[in-house]
Length: 107
Image 1 (cartoon, helix red, strand yellow):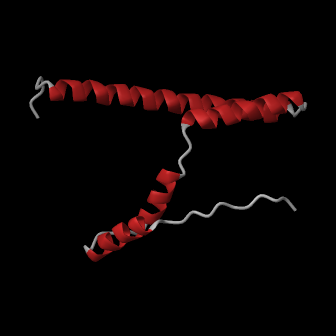
Image 2 (image 1 turned 120 degrees about the vertical axis):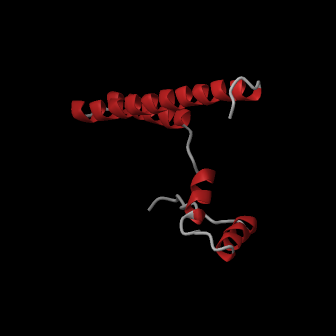
Image 3 (image 1 turned 60 degrees about the vertical axis):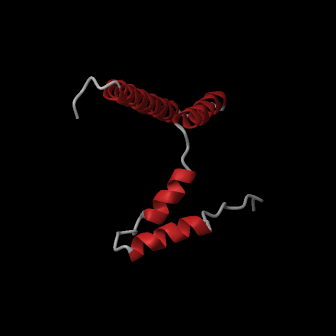
């Protein structure tokens, strides 16, 4: 059996108190704990892409089936599309922030 240990996702005291305060205020906190853990454990697109590209190299070196290699390539394409979409959205938001801050748009 492998010596790998599963990393436990645990909320710290501050995070627990924030969730309890939201519950006390009548707010829904059904997924708040999951949201906090997901934010902390999020993997960036670039790290995911690097990992999948490493997997692609591995499948090519080990002579995997063409269908498997194609599937890994498609994952790389999907990650790149998501990265581009996020960058485009960021540029749009930055553009509007710039003009709103300069007072060019009436809000």
